[in-house]
Length: 330
Image 1 (cartoon, rainbow, N blue to C red):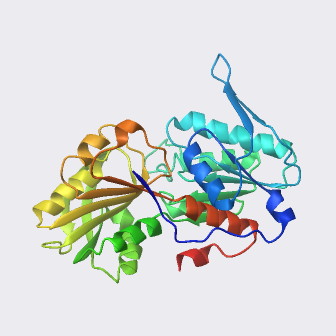
Image 2 (image 1 turned 90 degrees about the vertical axis):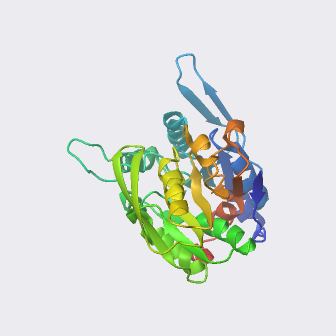
């Protein structure tokens, strides 16, 4: 079940001309989320033809005039990653050639982000490669949510607005009135994210799981740094892919005496066997957002899906009106 959060009132356009100059289009990756964003903004998604040739090539055509308009293209680069990324590039190129005044690529989930640096010889830094592709296609600005690492913003030489989905999860957790909370980072790399989350939860204590990764999508959990005994442990991460790291972390927290364990993440990638791992009884609840669309087989009883449509819609409106985005998170 997707729970929509309504912390922000829908914007009232300053002038009719400004409102008409704002155009919103969606790729095929997550149309339900784009539809919610459009509803928040009081707009309709722009008409567009998307089709595939017999050999698999993608075709995109914008079906209304966008000359002189500020265009926002909503497309997460989720599964199938390559197709969705290519569709985004084609949409950006089509808008640029249609004389849009500004093209903003709205990327709720930024794929290829995990290879953000070289950790061994002869590796590609795909996060930078994707940044180059989007920029060269003609995007003037990027809006992305919860990057795997914040340094990816520096890979772009165009304005970049980075927003966070965790405040939506935070509001939901606060509404549950949980007691004796300890916020847990599933690895050392996520400490800054977990610390910021803990601060918003009345300066809750912080614990860290010592994790050693043996290979891609394979992690060995070793120990917990911090006190979790008798507490409600809230595991916080940016994404859940196969669920190995977070489920092993949950089991370890149970062994160390945690009374309850909640798992929270913005991006629910849910590659097999994530659902089996997450629904094994380790967690009281698994809380994620709808940056990535859900298939019917992804749902299980402990899953809660929160909507980030209002957050994205408000961010788009503030960018369009040239007002502060960062003030939303203070």
